[in-house]
Image (cartoon, rainbow, N blue to C red):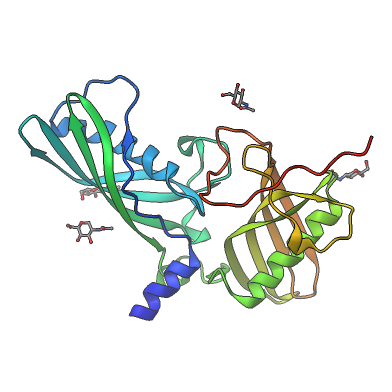
Length: 275
Ligand SMILES: *[C@@H]1O[C@H](CO)[C@@H](O)[C@H](O)[C@H]1NC(C)=O
Ligand SMILES: *[C@@H]1O[C@H](CO)[C@@H](O)[C@H](O)[C@H]1NC(C)=O
Ligand SMILES: *[C@@H]1O[C@H](CO)[C@@H](O)[C@H](O)[C@H]1NC(C)=O
Ligand SMILES: *[C@@H]1O[C@H](CO)[C@@H](O)[C@H](O)[C@H]1NC(C)=O
């Protein structure tokens, strides 16, 4: 059982717990009433998505429980929420509300979160949240779609080979001046096909670095540009059993508002342009 839990965490990026409060800045007056559960859930979703530095954005699917705990002059609103994973990686500048929910047959990931909002003098803040994430079970996947590719752990050696192949291909094809490196692996799936054998399908998040795309220096030395200067991208790569590589990347310009604020990430400056 324990092995299963660990596997599911390695297969998908879990949602972090957070204890840094997110305050509502809209100017709305909040009351100590269970009617606040819907706006409360929206504020909670903003907070959960903002404090989540890996993987994909989530959307609310259901409020399963809510209760108000009244204090002297303030109160706490406790919520239990069901969340669904979207197809927008956290580097995607779209708001989570505009993102598409991942389909069941793509091994959807669901999360269940406990959230506490503190309401003081009409102002609400999300004071804590904790979430469990879980992909659709293997049994359900087999029932729904026996031939669909299955999700592999994020560190699967064959899967990582396909990630490397996809990244290499993207860097050979693109016309940007900088070299892009892997930021993280989003998900890896594999499936068997008669014609080609075992195929690997990966989603990888990439980031622009301080190295020139054409220079031949050791790629390990390339540092990602600082979040407000770096383009980011989400690539979908396929490595067929016959060695054929196909990669397709969506590149996001360096938008200061939506760049991932990964704490403590070392970053460099753009390569000098030769005039
Ligand atoms: C939402 O949660 C309620 C309460 O647990 C439950 O009765 C209802 O079936 C859920 N709806 C969906 C769509 O899951
Ligand atoms: C949420 O709270 C319920 C009831 O207190 C508990 O059983 C569950 O484990 C909690 N879930 C998370 C993700 O903290
Ligand atoms: C890069 O530029 C070349 C020449 O203009 C063009 O043929 C190729 O399609 C471009 N590559 C991409 C990925 O846009
Ligand atoms: C970056 O932030 C500055 C200052 O807040 C703003 O003026 C600018 O429009 C932003 N740039 C982009 C690309 O969003």
